[in-house]
Length: 536
Image (cartoon, rainbow, N blue to C red; front, side, top):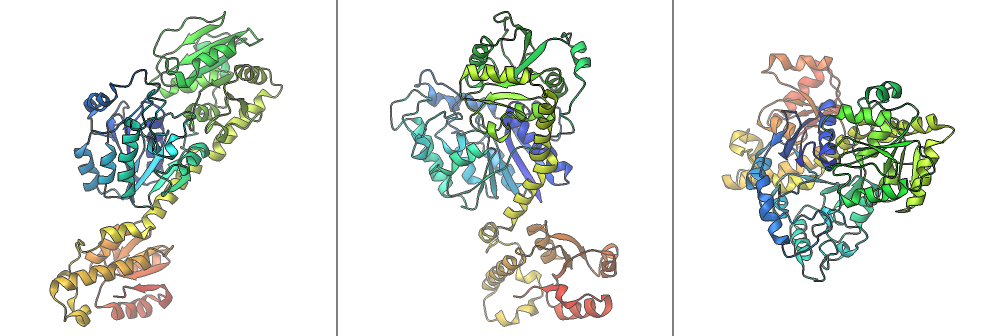
């Protein structure tokens, strides 16, 4: 089983970090995977790059008539044919699409992918007419238009056009396509969307390497960064943390002004601009952080993290902070309640209520059992978001998708590369009356019928024979085939069967089934009920 993960970036932004963590986690679990991006900013040479970022200029031309666009908006209109060709010609079994905008793939490109697709929703783009952060808008339930993100009053605006483009493409996708919502919030939103509610929409979080994001001695870090031990450190950060309105920096400042405690310093990362001290609060500004080890140290020298965002799906920063044993205060919005348990490992403030946010900061900083909050934060990650918990769930999903029959029915028809002339033609004497071309088609249809049966078996299978049919079966259901035996292969001779653990033996040599079955039963003492033959 091989998974091709596609995301516009590999380290820039939350979706990129999440996609890369999934990729790394799959490799740790010995699942073959590739990560394909538009632009790589990591130091990982295994990441594949198809850079067409210069196309973004053309993609945004359609937005020139819209003034004061509130947040990021993606039309995804420029095709990346080279990327689609690579995907379709690759040996990947499943294509897992993550954040694919920034002109990496067009909406129409999605419909050209011939392999099973999994979508992960890192924001709202998949089920809207182009916005990534929809706020309280409900137009996505119908056909978008009158887009408040674009400040548009037109029903047939670009959001409506994009929505209908998606509708046309998504209508032609297999209805067994899976869509992953990282939080319960975005999963429920997607289920209300008339664009994608026909798909299998499930909730599955991002994984994190909890052995990397760990607790480090606070005193030594304070000394390293020249921060006084007696100071209470409040940390805030995200990509474009102070310039992206959605990250709520303005709400953070308002809540800080309401604090009674004054022995506090603010630590900010991810900011693009210089920041001055605020209301007698000293601000430590770290800007963009490229080294995750630095980020871990910042979490560990802090006392509480604040996430005052207006909308969030499943924020990496909270999971990272929790894994580093740092409690978090945030608004009770979006997918944040999936992570924070109110007054157990953090504090959920009423949405956009800066006084409540300030109260939450005070509550954590002066909590009599602060260490218990820290332990609970770490425990939440280990139980719900660690690689050991999450990666097996993705593997299980991928295997389930490979069992779905419709993909193979649609792709293993007359175009099959198994030709009757390459097989034991005497096996099919009962079909000899038919023309040769018809025999090939007839065989394909019968093989599809056989594959339907074999794909439903939840057992470990050993192939007897590794010729054309054996190799084809192994390619179609790789997660079930644990090995093969063949008389012509000394290293995999049937005599080695005695040392192997298996549930069934599938005879893939046509025309000699009875002979082989007799040999397996008499010579190798294989129970008859463990032997499967191809019935055509």
